[in-house]
Amino acid sequence: MTVRVRFAPSPTGYLHIGAARSALFNWLYAQKTGGKFLLRIEDTDLQRSTEESTKSIIEGLEWLGLAFDEEMVFQSANADKHRAVANKLGAEGKAYRDFTPRRERDDATVKQGVADRARAHASEGFDSRSNPYRDLSREESDQRAASGEPFAVRLKIPREGKTHFEDIVYGSQERDYSEIEDLVLLRSDGHPLYNLSVVIDDIEMGITDVIRGQDHLTNTHKQILIYEALGARVPRFAHLPLILAPGGKKLSKRIHGEIVSLTTYRDAGFLPAAFRNFLALIGWAPSGVQFAADSTLGNDEIPVDPRVGELMSLRELIDNFSLERIHRNNAIFNFDANNPKRWTDDKALWMNAEYIRTMSLEELLPMVKAELRANKLWREEYEDDEGEWFAKTVDLIRQRFHTLKDFSSQGRAYFSDDFDFEDTAVNKNLKKQPLLKQLLPALADRLEEIDPFTAETSEAALRLFAEEQGVKAGLLINGSRTMLTGQAVGPSMFEVFAVLGKDRSATRLRSGVPWFA
RNA sequence: GGCGCAUUGGUGUAGUUGGUUAACACGCUGCCCUCUCAAGGCAGAGAUCACGGGUUCGAGUCCCGUAUGCGCUACCA
Image (cartoon, rainbow, N blue to C red; front, side, top):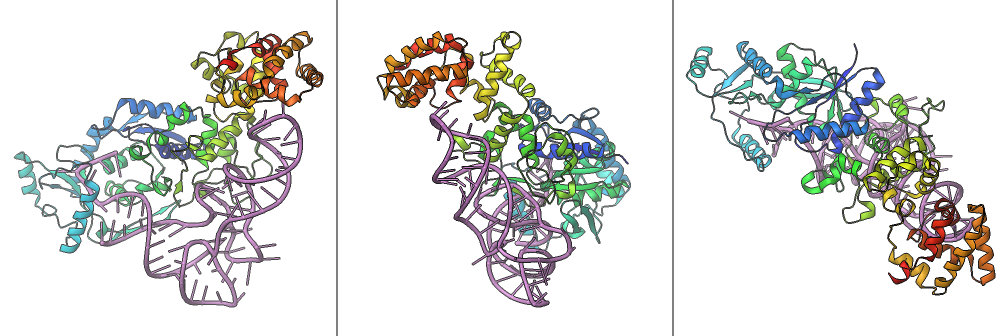
């Protein structure tokens, strides 16, 4: 039987990184098994579901490269079907009408309310299934319904027994029926509820393996009861450990802000491949062998050596993926909101930098182009006449960049004459040595005499000039770097000369701007 | 409150059927390289494998308890 898995987010916000990881694992499993990866938008909560959210989910999946098969399903479109199934269950005596007046719940306090109610029931010896309507006669039930009295439909959980399933990740799971209350299938306004909808849709879509967050682990028992009531085949389940915030707390938008949104990473200049790679390594690891950061990116050959590094190409990710190797404990996503250098997980940042400097230029260039274009730094010549120059420049500066954003910020001076001078750089490399104000323009004169103008020839000229002037080459080098790029750090100065060219180098060396800034 | 799940250095993880000094990556420190910063190379700090019992010749690996965290316990999803 071919594997059919699905990603079923509720469109009540941006795509959460935890959800993105669920999608990734589902997708990887489908690729690995030659199965189908389906997308279902669980928009039954009309109050909170939004179209923008659906759009952002689709965008997020697209960005990560997780294409889904077949038509996307909107759960709300199946509401009639869900209602029909609930009613059928009622007709078969597997569900019943509950005429208890609906209790309004304030969304903000439900958690507490639920706990309080449970506590009260426990002390009063309340049986969750002692609903007075559970055993109401068919006639009376029909009569009351016919008279227009509102009712909810609840599943009738058998008195004796227990549910059991083998979770691929969490192992054997058991729950006594007495622990499960007669869950509501249909609200009194006829609105089908989550557990019902999920099960019906999963059956409808032919889902063979349900891979989702661990927060649904205990819900699974209820869902199995529904599968059984419907006489449907129960799929396999694999629950994923959660991704938590530092301190082991839940990662939520309310508290942690945009850090939890996948789009944040896209907008911050992450590469889809890098973030995907990072996400894959949370809660899962290739195999019991050594990690080594020596994998060759972009190399899609199946490694002969079974050992896989943490840097894995998509091919390697797929080939090595297995549900059995997902582990059970929740992971912490590390970040520090007060530290701009660590605004997100260190390892994610490292991995992104690693991708930027080791991936093929062919793949990187279009992304740099998009980044420059978004910042009005792009010139069409970079794609034809100056194509070679562009590739060479990107290759030179990528070495110390962490995100795509760096190309337009730190890398600005390479693509525009309008760039800023950093105060610390100016103070340290220029103003500290006033003599440079004369030396640098003089150096410009020397450089202009060079032909051809290359890293080698400019280095020779600069060193000779330093010797003649009786100053250290480093003084001129660091001063030049600040004049040419506005920064104190960057690639080898002579490479920068070569890339910027004779004229621009000379012009910038003579600029008075930093001296008066 | 009840039920369930988890617990290896700061973080992500490895640790095959229990067997010498618990491994890798990120981060951190120092050194080398050097025109700066990265990268790279080398070295290092950091874990009584949550805690307490037990089984065993021997436990991170098996059992029990405790603690902590997380989840579920809604006419939310």
